[in-house]
View 1 (cartoon, rainbow, N blue to C red):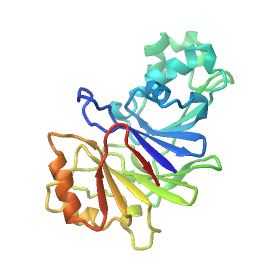
View 2 (view 1 turned 30 degrees about the vertical axis):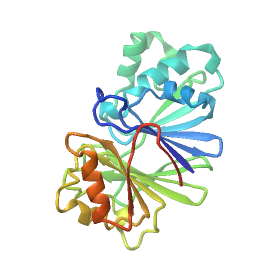
View 3 (view 1 turned 45 degrees about the horizontal axis):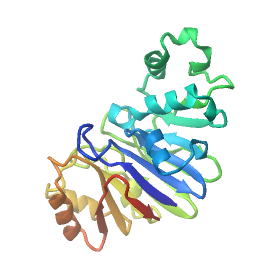
View 4 (view 1 turned 90 degrees about the horizontal axis):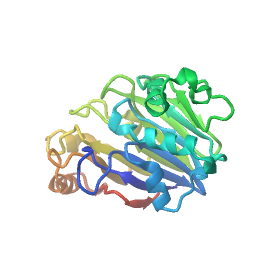
Length: 262
């Protein structure tokens, strides 16, 4: 599995950084975790055809994690060269996809192929996954990638994701509470299998809080990536200081375009 960080920022107006989005590659299959970035443009820049996109997974209903769906939907649905694209979008409750359709095309009642009932010609196929129980629930499994959602408490309908493919296990925490009291137990539980990579947010948590390294040090992973970073709250120096405190776990500050082989 390969993880490409398309967007690693918390602020929409930050220079040279898009909002949260990551691409998981398994063979030729491509999967997106959050779409705060203009993902169709960024995938084109990486020479990745949209027909290789097999799934999109949204952690929670905040716009900076799904605003890129508008551009992706318009691109795929309105241009004939994407007739072979079929992409399921797995999203939590709280996102009004009919409002998205109204924004893009006007009243959805006049555009049958843009309703969320997903007629056969629809290419972007919206699916709402229910809130997961504490021990998680599988929301996607196409035989190549398995995605399990775990509840967190950032806002209602917030989730972390466990991605499993090729014998690898990767967790994206999504946004968390500032005190990390909802840091997913799938990362820290003595009974849980070890992970190959954890990607955690730094938009709301304070890395310089004395309790933060104590919690993150319990992560059962060799590598912790700090992404979705708010520079004003968590400058690079805070990431570097965290790395010293929780060694031997390797801590990496994500940046747009960074690629990790898992």
